[in-house]
Amino acid sequence: MNTFNITIIGTGYVGAVTGACFAELGHNITFVGRDQKKLDLISSGKSPIYEPGLDDLLAKNQDRISTTTDLVGAVKRTDLTFICVGTPSQDDGSIDLRQVEDVSSVIGSAIRSSPDYHTIVVKSTVLPGTTEDLLLPILEKESGKKAFIDFGLAMNPEFLKEGSAIEDFFHGDRVVIGSNDQETSSILKALYGSLGVPIYTTTMKTAEMIKYASNAFLATKISFANELGNLCKQIEIDSYEVFQGVGMDTRIGPHFFRSGIGFGGSCFPKDVRALIAHARTVGDEPRILNAVIRTNDDQPRKLINLLKKHVRPAGRTIGILGLAFKPDSDDVRESRAISIIMDLLKEGASVVAYDPVAMENFRPLFPGITYAKAAGEVLDCDAVLIVTEWKEFEDLNYENRIVIDGRRIAKARDEAAIYEGVCW
Ligand code: UGA
Image 1: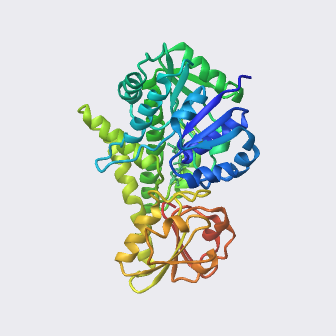
Image 2 (image 1 turned 30 degrees about the vertical axis):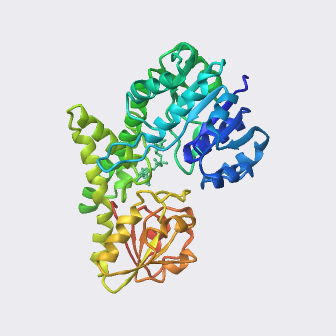
């Protein structure tokens, strides 16, 4: 196996996981970041983000991992650079490309004086055309060199899920390599080859679109399950049983049909909105994608409406189980808990919330609510809303409680005195 020296720019979720997993495969990794605290954590074998298994991987591979704030120096010492910086949403849904542009320009200047062939890989989620039409010219201008002749360039989207990112890296369904030349593709094939995961090679623009199309389709599947789930609720059918039956059709598949209060996180909402904004720039109005967002935005309201069927929130204390956008994550970006708590406060309720790991991240958003020390305390409230399906919520005692469930916790369904599920 070839051993590569790899620079990873960005110590967020994509960068940290990608770097640690490449180190586990035997490659030498230099993490570059601006936040010295995060770099120090990585240097001491600790993960800068909450991701099961990541601490172990970083600790185990310390001899192959280094960190620095000096991007130019790192690029000069390595063969490959992965761009894993953020592409945050702007107000109109489009994405902010400043970080990818900035690092591309520094990488360009770093390879200017270097005689070695360096390969640059864009892992950040960017819209179709960004790598070729925006980043390639920056790299060529700053380096004074020609892409695909003097340096390699590829777009290699990530398909990792928070909470199971390491498993997804080593046992993914596919690796997509977007590059416009053979040399770069073969370097990346050598890098990923040992995983034994199918490799799909395409152009950079197509690779960028595969990323958006994948996330948009998964988001569509969820909103579809929620739209039909809302109907199922009205006519007293359990949508989970429906989608179990539907998912057995191999043309459809069983995944991402869990109905409830919809999708949150840093990817689906942002990526679908960015795709809509991008389509508009070329005069297209994507009707399905607009509906996906609308259905998703409405879904948390269903939980509040079901609560109001049983308890008037004004003057009551309502418990919230789960603040993370999904279990096994401390990420609260676009968590459904945000709009649910906002609605409850507007209705005049007091809120007691609990999450096994996400409370510290959530607290700045709602400093005025009560954060419980244990899940059990939430059960003493006038009613309990289940917002994230943490495994430990399956062990609570829901007897004599009023529970409105957005995520389908079986034990609550079996035990609670009054129980309502959003789509069942
Ligand atoms: C998602 C994709 O699944 C990854 O393939 C992709 O790499 C990642 O975005 C990204 O672009 O970086 P992630 O956001 O980490 O991963 O988490 P998911 O497991 O996909 O869940 C997203 C949201 O959908 C969560 O709020 C979850 O509760 C919700 N969801 C998921 C449902 O409501 N129903 C489902 O059936 C599945």
